[in-house]
Image (cartoon, rainbow, N blue to C red; front, side, top):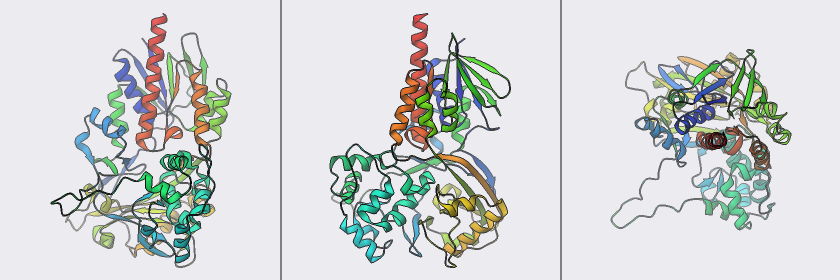
Length: 483
């Protein structure tokens, strides 16, 4: 019997296992080995305040097709839901203002939309749109480019909060080519104006046709599952019909005459015809060191960011002041009214953002909030992450009160930590990814997948999983033909 080993039980590994099952059929043995005691990786949920709430990734980018297609394939399409009409905000310059519309990861396509978020001097720098560093085909830190062309305020107040929400990183440490590829391509075509490049990346505003009183509503940007995005990994695992081995770490890979052998810390030696590595960069580096040294070195150069999530279940009545607002992003370098740095970088008011999480008319019902902590390379964030759970909850509640005036005692709280949870796409990230994939291309029966490659979002993870499964299927078919 053909056996394929999938190392890693996060969404990428489980999506690869599922796709392998559909490609290879019922007779193939698929084994998933996961270090943790549970499947799902960064897609995780818990019960709090009487609701099941995601405590990892809570949404996917709906404009990419991968998740919607896989959800339909799994029979979960009736569970798809989208955010409501609540709006997001920024806390910048000591004020909370609406999140500017029509930006590309915070870079405005029109300076007029950013007036409330910037000082007069900051708006003048944005309008000046000065020449700055860019070589077509090259790469540069997002922060360096934006600061040089549009000024520090656009970088700190608009771009950095959005990148921090996606990558738990800083604009000054992330490369444009991998994090905002559409903007990089627009600059390749015409590097003269960063604002114009952003405008070209945006869809044209919807036009009003004859007889219409308003343009049609835009397609939803984000989506999730009614029971939580954490339902996706478990459904993938069931559909893959894989043998699951939890609490075991693959410590080494070795080539064999028939394929590969994986040694685990449980003393096992797992023989397989092919292997998919869907693990974080440090594990890729360790497992490839003896087989593809250049690929291993490239994986080792990918830094990881740590973060934490403080989840509060508040009495529904106490959360009433948040009505109509889906959340707030806090600008880099901002200070609380008391002069201290903010502990949180963002607050998501889940009960407002997602209609299916809205409280009922029951006076005892709760409203759930998610408060995010952690910016890679930020000293204050690193200090916050070292606090114990009660202290972190207290600090996050203080920030919430300072941001919104909501200081009610929670019905229930939880702290979820993600050490090394998000890869940082630094300058030259695509070169590192190319080195990894080129090294693996020389190893028959081996493939890689995961958030460290072509995007940290769930759609990108599914795309890498499908590509890895296709590579393995082609290899096994070729090997069978040769035999």
